Length: 267
Image 1 (cartoon, rainbow, N blue to C red):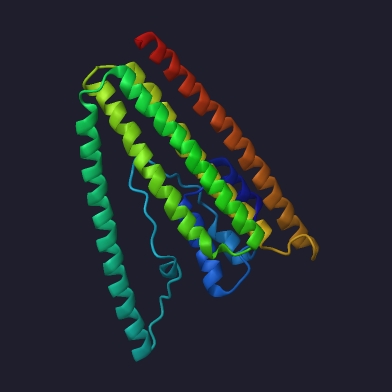
Image 2: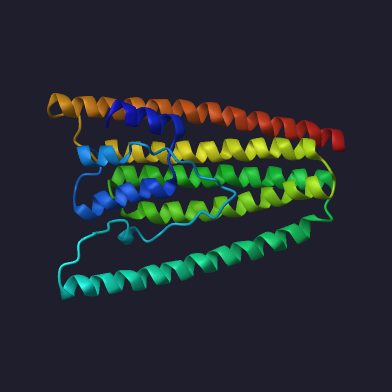
């Protein structure tokens, strides 16, 4: 990993889907996920964020590796199969999108008659569920690090992403009710800050998982000087990301404390 790459990933994090793409591409090619110049170059310019208020979906890891060459009937068949697979994925994504829209409308209809205190309570409950989801995420990663088998990681990511999506929808619905029904722009602004901090935390966590998986599934540090430098860069990136997560959690807690103070005033 180049210093510029480590800096970009450590500062901004990357999307969970991007992390999965990198890991799946390496696994499909039969190479170590830890290090190679070509893979390291792929990370340049990354650090895109996950907006947890938008749809969080994963594509089939088998589709992460694509070939631009077509040479013969066999390749034509592969192209047709790929197009068919993409059509299925598009249909699945559209179904998920429509299901989320329906879920969002159902949540909104339920919160319209809720009091400010009840809406804040719903936000606090969703935050508690977020903590539990992160615990599941970390425990799943720990098992994968021990086994050194990353094949279970996409399923783990899909599971926690589905949970984060529902929780985000719930909090956004509560925020909308606070703003539209109760005209509490002050509270909605705090909730917006909370959602932004949670988005940042998810980005940093995805990047941290990638770096830990790459370091864990490598033989770095036992070869030449270049290997040792790469290992040190990975460790430095992990340290930076852990610091970013810690500071982001502090910001999350500050937003929650502010909401709790508002909740007390509303009682």
